[in-house]
Length: 490
Image (cartoon, rainbow, N blue to C red; front, side, top):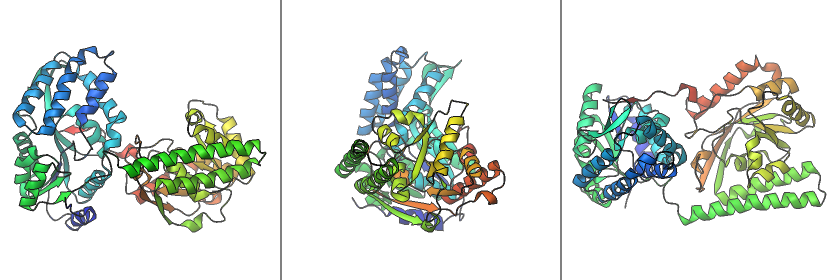
């Protein structure tokens, strides 16, 4: 199947930005995410069956619904949704909301196509109103829409009375012609014409809406939709960054894990042979960075490499995107660097022993008395080695910057060493949060000029200023600035 060039598609959106008010409509299953969100909901229902025993009866209907969705029979799909809705009668809406959040965090977060994320961002930059239009329920859609910062959703809605489901589905369902009705309503609200709007989907069930918008796009289309798209000369996009792994990804993941294990073993042998701790740590860092990133298929484009040279000791800060951050930073920094990480990592059976051999400082974030951590960090800097700190403290799914904590900047002032900000642009492309398999990628890195303690204002001002630089370079808002509650389209 011949797909359109994705980068060319994004360039076209950029060139047309601001020309005409428009809405960009996105299907969910198979378009924004790989697979079906209802499977994740069914899995969470099964996992929490003992706690939510009343939901067990809906599991079989969910499975039937997925089978019917893949076969594309509209009439049966409507009947199955009504069966599923009846099986939910009496269950609290809060229960389903909780299952939806669990489904997102445990499964759906790692199924978001990175191409879909880029597509959403391109439409946002073009000034288009963004809407997810899906046959799924709001409990499946809302967590994903919230993370993507999408303003509104149109979805299949279930009747709720006094916080509990009545067993009825609100008609029309957002499926087939129902999606077209929802899109017309949104277009009227926004004062735009459907011929100026975009719609992305993988399903032939969405042909009614595809035929009404001016910019229909088939994404990972079913055979039937692909045939129709070819006949109508609609663009077809292939998203392959998520979903079923290929053999290369599987092999690269295995080889990378073996590299981590071999590096740990080398550290143990070095310790028994009496190697000096600092020298041993440097060898481990270089082995992990060079061999590990090679097996993972990581290439590097680094801007500002000169800012790393000769600036030691220092505190290197970075934005945390992926479990592969450690490989990337080991490849980049190479020597005399001690990381500060949360204490939970010490117990990780794979990476924990390696971190301990590297002299890592483990931080208990719940401990209000951090005097021992502070002293250990100062001892490292006074010895001539550097510190590596993620001021966010945790990863976000899409790479949005989490609010920075000021500890790294406080340490820099106290120890009179510079802060060197390292901006990781796209490590999440190789392994997103919650992902299991590594995919080759070219990692883009920007190293900002060192910020010397004598040039810092207050610690909090410095922290905020550097956080803003990260946001600007990544083209993303801080998580604190993302839209928070989600507005469901009526």
